[in-house]
Image 1 (cartoon, rainbow, N blue to C red):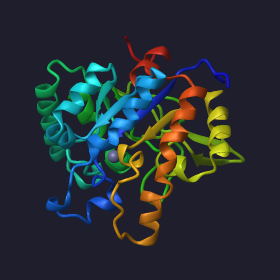
Image 2: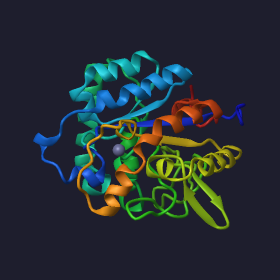
Image 3: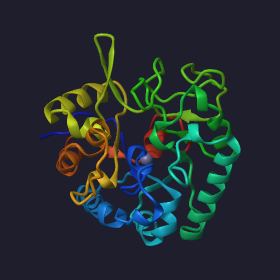
Image 4: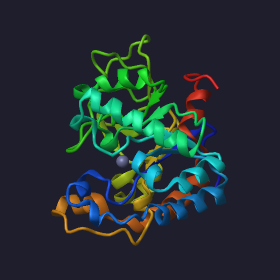
Length: 290
Ligand SMILES: [Zn+2]
């Protein structure tokens, strides 16, 4: 099976534990939050090593605090370290001041583990960037971030925003859907397949797990012919032992459906598409300086 394109695609992993996803987080007390993230991340790291692929890890600060050795290992293996908030609270639950405090805490934790870590990328928990929370881009620029990868360019029941561009672009401060060359940050929207006037998510999380894989591959190939694909996976999706909470039906489906499929699907995708950390993809596009 040959590589179908030479354009680099972004492989991103949201480094969080099984109790961080939005539909699970609210159900647990702190005492119930047994750490499984190291066990869950190991198979992903093995897979990346096997394929000699580097990825971007959007790290939850709490995970770095509890598992500094894991973060050291990511840095030592040449993966890009990036920020996924401190507590995994979505932006729409925070004031700008609370978000600043999270970024300060994150910076302190990461600098203690990997001194001099050069972090330029951010992804909001639960893709919580939309026009209600667009103030976050100014805060990110204040802290020296260069790109954001939080925008889900279609509305879903939980997150996302219609009408945004699909290629990396500089969003306007007044309206994230509008490009503005003076915008301080680069936005790298998640991948959606487009056709017949529709946008269809395929490249990560529930969508990558739940859709027939032949369809996923077809859609990804068509997207990759036009722009870099962004794949996103979570360690808890790669661990068959991830605890399943008794959630309402739809929450349970969205969070746990077909968890066993993630590793084999990712293994195949790594053989079909060339991948790199998001920062490298942006450099190749000329959006970021190397
Ligand atoms: Zn997350």
